[in-house]
Image (cartoon, rainbow, N blue to C red):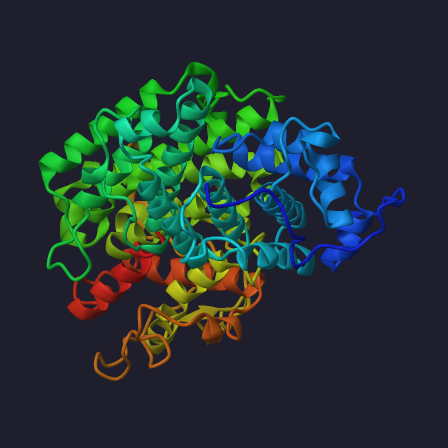
Amino acid sequence: MGIPTYESPPPSGAQSSSEEPEPVPRPSGLFTNEAEFWLHCTPAEVARLISVFEEEVESVYPFIDVVELSSRAEQILHVMRNRRPLDMAEGLELPVTLRDIEMTKIAVATGLVIEGHGKTELSTAMAESVERQVSRISSPEVELKEIQLLTMLSIYYFHCDEDLLAWRTIGIAAREALEMGLHRRKSLFDNFKDTGSRRLATRVFWCVYVLDRRWSFGTSLSFALADRDIDPNLPEPARYARLCSKLWEAIPPFGSQSQAIPEDAVQALDLRTQDWLESIPSHLRLRHPRLGLAARSQPRLLQRLRALLYLRGNHTRISIYQHFLLSASSIMANLQRAWLVVNIAQDSVEVLVHLNATTDIYSRQQNAFNYFLLSALAVIFLSVCHAPNIFTEPCRKCFLDAVELVRGFSRHSAVSRRLWKSIRGLLPRLKSLGIQSTSADGSQGGELGVVQQQTSPVAGSTVACGPNNMPTAETMGSGSDFRELSHPVRADSGAVALWDTRTSSDMIADTDLNGSVPDMFQIRNDLLDLFDALGQGQSFPGEFGTNFYSPGETDAFNRRLQGLI
């Protein structure tokens, strides 16, 4: 359908003689040149890297037959080395097409990125060679393999911290799916006559749909697929994606005077979320570590799927209830709801901490799991900012655990840039308040952000989380567990704005952030400082009252933290 059998070599292909010598195996990490990699790579190594893609990606998004692709590794390598196609005359049931080679490249490139915890010169070269060929505007028709390839490329970009490219690419895949009629039952049955191909096409469409929602929530950009365009009679295996659409519709648009979701929508969305969680098969439900149900040894694939499904459920409920944390008055008027969203955030942190401590699942898919961590951190910050006397102490232990996970971030990752972008504008304002540390001998230390870390007499103590463990008068009057801070001296409200000129925009170019993100240890210290400063409201209610921030500053603070959710 518009993409012929492989007739010419890919631009990045390697030349070799027709008598192909046996390649000398070398570790994939030693290569930076793509042609050299394919020349020396063995079918077993290609199959291994494809299996990494299968375990980490295809197990969650089954839009491609990875087993078939892996079984043809030897033939695909033969084509790439000899710069000529194999056909049915050479004993193949199916010819090796250009799309087969490109899909192999992206599967291998994604495997390299996952194993290397980031993109490399080799993976970048592979992706760029495919990018030059895929989704030409002038192509007469699209085919299912092109949509599959675009979906693979989108996931590759996600694992490379290129969230915008992931969103853009899945948008192209979505439009091609519409062009093929995958969103209509009649065209689906007309174009895919046999049951097997029709099932694959259905899975491809719904994987594109789910990723379209997922990348849109991650970038706060619009969906490419509109629900009203989708045939209600289309086979639908993905109830979670429809739930995301309903949530997106309920969230007030940017710039709205009120960020609250109507009460009837809150109840309906939460009910649908819990119904979806209940519908998850028992073998895919999380064995929660808090309940002692987490087995010491679980199948790795199942454990990752269980964690992802559970955390997605938590994140959906956080998105439903987070607007209750946007002001002190809202918290006090809806204290039970506020506690609910805070407890959900702390539960997510607990699951992530256990996952990181007991497996390598978190470290291999940091981009996926850090998304949930940042969301939980934002909830804790919002709660402590607007109701420090209620939430500071109950959230302290959980916050410390989350910050320790932050230390594992790469300073060059999109996640660390998002986190730093959100907190760095707060620090100048807090410094302007005259907040200082108290050194061990009682003398005044430096200003916030440059103080020496000290250990509080109660540091390391644990505080149970939840509404049944409300802080007592003693805990509400206690000092910081991170720093011993002196009584703050409030600066003139007009002297220093919360946002300096470098951080006044909600959208900061990556070029600026690339040069300004400190190491993760410094970000960790800044997070601790920020938590301490916000939590001081419990000790100094006269200084940190409802007028501590101006309305405009409060809105800006909320926007920055909501951006992490």
